[in-house]
Length: 315
Image 1 (cartoon, one colour):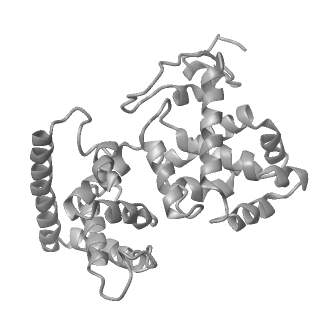
Image 2 (cartoon, one colour):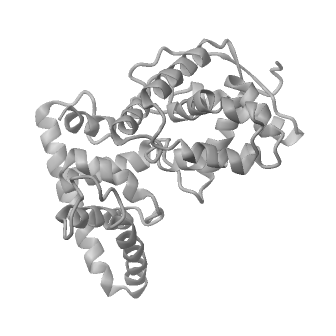
């Protein structure tokens, strides 16, 4: 498939300017590296602390793997060898990146990669690229998730003020609890697989922003959140509303709206300092149009102003 050829580029396994021979060499070297990671994990049983770590990780992975995408033909049926491959990749990732280890939901992110790539070592390194170098991956306990939500709130205020104001008047509305799953699982539970993977590819392309997933979030709120504002729904009802829409939303409409929102954002001549990072590409940026808006400071406390590089530039 086209995805099998393209995803290794989008997930940083191969450089975009690499030749066929260079890619074959990279693939060979990565395969050898993967075998070393596996061997290191398998010998970890000699260290009691390491052995306990992998015992605990394996117990969690085994529970998740048997529940991940079991209706998909690639993982369907009892004693499916692809489930063993998924488990091996996740265990080896925990060995490769012990500080991250394994957190619930990683199997959901790996499964589509494995179904597309269909090669253990290649899928592992694509997964590494996804986890290490893609901004739209968060874990529920890290500060990255809070950073994502902070950007999302500020972007919501800018792009959909009516919905923001509705959330703001609720005691915990701006926690945006309904959006946590969107970010954590990259919309996989919200849209059919084909549409969700189109969104993944759109985010991986880094087209004009590294934070396109946040524009997708705003798009969902803009397209499907009007009833929430009109009916003045509370926090719990908002969560129920969006959960009930899972697998019933149009991915194509949401993507079109997200692109429109990004276009409008890129036309802004001035943006608040809290959204500066969204306008700056940290990734490859192969198709960036070098958008450089003026940034103004909205910091309120003296401490925030001292840290802000745009302090003194007022709205």
